[in-house]
Length: 283
Image (tube, rainbow, N blue to C red; front, side, top):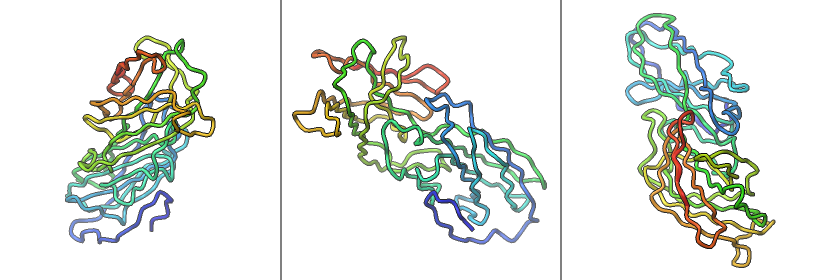
């Protein structure tokens, strides 16, 4: 029976009857995640088994995660002599709809929110013997999109930021890919208090968000002076549109520049893997 509050339902296809049943022993771990929160906001990992692209939902399980540590292993009882695809999705409870692990979608997209971080893994296993052990390390399937300004160029009037972007509608954790169908997402947040070094320069983040990867997308960034989060003509400090922005899994894409200057220009940096250099895009 499924009891996890992350929005999913349980169909009950029967486990195939041929082949002896035995326990598969999986040890799960999260990476040393390089992010604002170091991935420590994750508190659940959903574990699922697929055979020939179909989930065996009787063996789906949700395991607690505390401070980046998965609190127990996953030991589904399966049939020997078969090949299974094991799929995992770790996130903060309630942030993603995982009723279908092949079409995971965010419940809502929020800006400047580390609890939107998530990790995933898929593994094909030939199950040959009872108690067979497998180790699985999850990695971040999301891109982290950042908008930042050099510290010396900060405008104290900036209060709220609104970002609009076209991204995949859902994510298939089995194939580790975003959907071909896209949707336009908009997220609004108070300006972030976070700072960091981007391309060798001390910067302050206007906002950031965790998004499904996209090879090339357009983004619109609006900055408001309204303490109430209004983006009316009298409140708008700046509005910027940038095309050809690449969002890659486990990668920082930084849109960086003095957005408050009359002759601003963005630069972009992209950081492959959070543990490697960033992707920087100058504005």
